[in-house]
Image 1 (tube, rainbow, N blue to C red):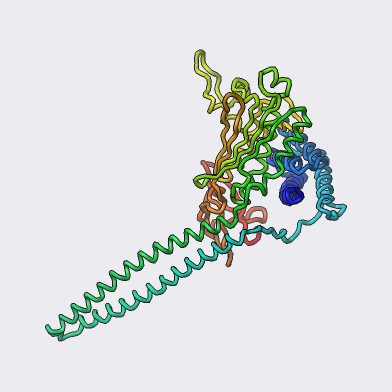
Image 2 (cartoon, rainbow, N blue to C red; image 1 turned 90 degrees about the horizontal axis):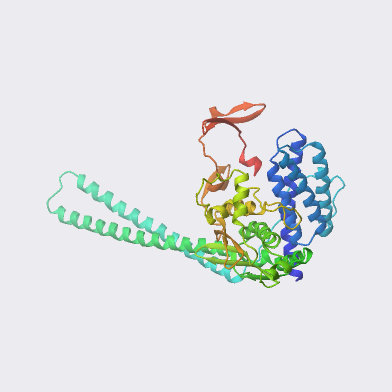
Length: 475
């Protein structure tokens, strides 16, 4: 259990710092009078609250909940972060950092608000099975050997070229005798045979090189795979504690924690999984008394299932609770303008359509807000995270009762199309799904505005002014 606790705290250390830094940066911009994306920092606070609960740090959870509530009020009023709110949230952030510093046995300076970020990011280590390292080494040697064969193939072609040049000079020589034609024809046939053999060898070497490159790519991806337990261990205890807190009884069923997947991908899905488990308990699961009156066992069931098949990672969170209330979903969707009112005798929206609506930002059918239930943001966070990973999420009803939410993404974050960019001697790769637009900019198109270099371009008929930033300065 100590190892699991250490793994959870290590993951939380990276995660909480990312959220705190992002919120502090937003507050600094708000103090400078710049507009702030309140919804984004609200989601940060919401995710931080769930992460703190998962590692059983109630003081951090309470402080994050206070920030979440403050940002929620701003969103409801359609306003911006004012100085008073920024001061209160800064106090919450200080509490979080001091509590985290105590957990990790680190001294934090008194002026934590102005603390300079570390110049060098902490080194991360990944424990790799020795067998995988050997397989990777073998794949690299196979590819290297095939590339060496391409060099030999090139030497053969150069030899054929020399013979062809010699034949051409002989044919151009004046006074060519008839008896010379036999030897010239023989030489031409030898060159043709050499070309045929070289072409055949080149095809075979290219085929073997492609196979070796594919094996190397697969081994590189596999070496970054870790069991799902390294990220999702401890969620069972967390869920049981939450159930006890709100007076519900649940059996927690977790399957597939030995499933291997990309470590960064699993870490990115940890918060969404926590959101789903919280929603299943708070919104889906009935009280023991209600379940008894409905003829159900007093103890409900909430499950987490992790599977990998056909290059896809699937994570499902399910329960045998009350299931989605389609009428209530339609009612709230109408109130928010997400669907149009039905005409008389018009069929209601399909269950698939209504269950897709629950992933809209801010959509919630809950009438009460508490630390467990959250503010209805969980499912939009799930959908957005899945999309960023190149996948998606959907909800379906379970029979005879209950609901299931499935997240499906590519199994590895390593294999994705990227745009390569060069800055000096450095090469950077940007996932294509993260790119909005690619422009070819000439030096004379760069202008200066308020002391900064900018470019102007048109998007959907509107002129956009964007800053020009050197990759070497920001990465």
